[in-house]
Length: 495
Image (tube, rainbow, N blue to C red; front, side, top):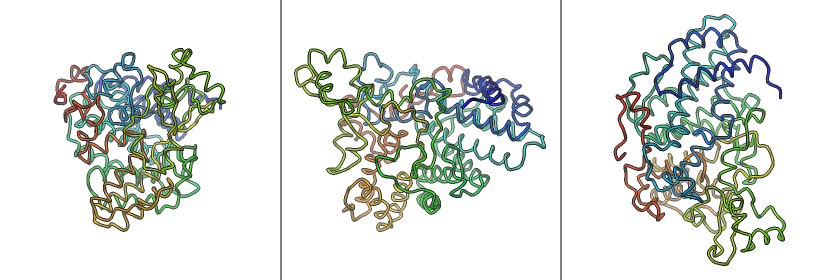
């Protein structure tokens, strides 16, 4: 679809405004308030284009694995026990994440995660400040509420990920230079309190979601409820986690999809997804490029498979047959017998049986198949997670039967029998197993789950390359450029 002139103008203006945030976390040029309020918030149409620009920024244009477009999944998977880099030498910085021995100069952490997230937060703050400063009568109350609710949701979403990757973080709530220049880090509890505040206010501002109004590519009341349920779970407020999971599940807007259709655009299971604008995106999704081999052999005729696996030719084709990040064998072996998620969402490319290849299988995540279809959506939050959130919250409240009912919904969808767990400890262990099998390579869930349940050091050390891991390495380093720019920022221990 051809972009209209207003949209192009807004994107160009936002590009100027948002790029400033790359220089320094809190070093923002003073005049932006005038730009945002006068130029962007003069009418509903201008405001809508500005909000569209923020969503577009979360995806980017070059397929780079920004935190909100593959980065959380890929780098969270490397830091956990899900992904292995196929070439540690060429992908040195990726290997630092995999071995949990990141250096403070790691540009993946500094640019693709930290800076990308704070750019989104800055943009959300600029929208909130701009809406408040605007006196235009052409900016209607309904559009004002949408702007505020959407910006608060996106700010909360990025705070959630920054806090779970970095621990204590700065918490900018304004785009004003004078209010952000000297921010220090605050505790994860304080971050969760702000996330809860933002999401609660967003829920109140969004119109009530109905079957006809639920657009999955825009934040809405139910996506805010879903993220709030997750945040309460992480904050160990079991009652509130269950309440907000209930609100999503009782809305009637979502249902579990067949495994083969779970990740399709506008799947009934999807609560929130990001639109991938093919008119501006260069190349493919980062997860498709990095997690799936360029040549998945299962798509080829048997004769072609034999050709590629011929020992005399394999080395030439190997870069196309082995994904950049393949699945850790610990994950592959963790699936229960008969789990259809393994046969539907996991595949592999073999290798020659001759030395030095010895028939090694390179397993890969097949949730986003690397075919020639041009995907236009990227799944962010889906209903299966909400079932598991409610199951865990109910189990923590000793409501075993209700917890098992939710757990078994996910198991049965995967072709598994009901869980045999009978006490709280057993149910919680079964839920953790389901989260691992259901949410693998999605949005850092496994890494965060291991940390919040206190099992990270034991589980990660089962991967030989991670045997020397210690508690300090469970959080990423604060980028050194940020500490130089703001001496009030401190570094995480061990870096």
